[in-house]
Length: 420
Image (tube, rainbow, N blue to C red; front, side, top):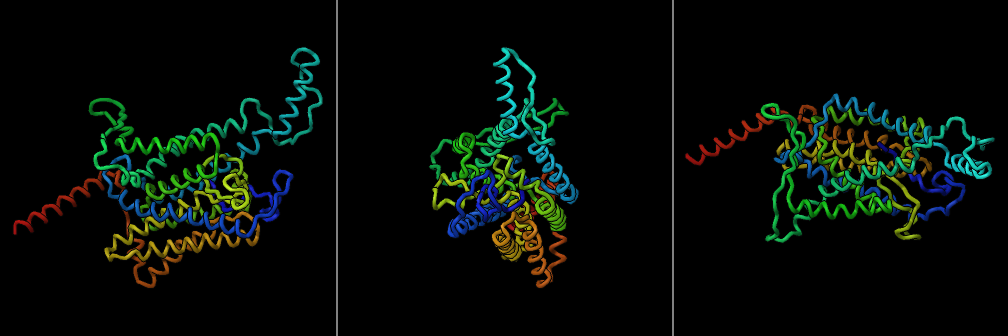
């Protein structure tokens, strides 16, 4: 998971030096402001709309749209799992893939000796190479990235289709022939039958899937930054909508652990930035700093990892649901945390621009997103209510039974009032 705000493709001195031996002209102040402002706006959109949709998601009836609840145990494990994944990707890209120039020289030498001798010969006097890089002829970084592209191609289409579905429903005419479908996979038979996948959809969903597939093919063929951002926004919104924290304490554990994770992997090593440069997948939002000069073909990008959006976003969405549980018709904690996110990300951009170095955004976002709402709770005397608020897991049979009992009770009360 990339969680650093940086501009890895910028070869100017402003971004930390050239990356390929050629110096690009420095970005204009207008271009830099446009890029950072666009990243900030793109980060706010999935958090705001994802939080609103998380409220409807918690009340949804469709099993395929039920949220995944993160417990305190999951939150404590997540930074460790993320660190192992990040380090594994770093070793995969940095250590086990050969230097491209070295591999090319070896192949050239091998072909030359083969043509001279008329048969395959061992390579004599191969070119010098780095001792820590082991050339592999079976795998290459391009093939691995192609495999990852196919994987995210499928996930991106599904995520984008789910994202645009509520908006597209407004454009369908009333007489549109909308048929219902259900995709059901089960395991076993009789009493031992267990549902593996139970997904309900309709004709409108298929139309959204077709439109999303067009974006997917565009991304697969061109890797254009706009297609990347469409998938990135869809992933972020779905993450905020479908990943639910069960209470504020769990949110503090998750954000606190990832705070340490982010600071260590960005400031302590070059692992995160290296993976972000090597990993060709829509796991980050990018925006060109030279858009005003080159238009849509610009290639001097600033980037923001999706982790900096989803992780604070699910905490902000939790505070919105807490606001609703108070039944005061105010969204104080949601707006406070949302403003804190704007402040934290703006501070990240400012410090990165001043020091010309990639910044761990969670270093600034976590204290802001936790500290501001807690200060408001202290001022209003609602700290106990905030930390005692807890959401039940909708997949838990006990929670479902309790919900049904509550519905039946409210229905019986309504009938009694009508009789009176």
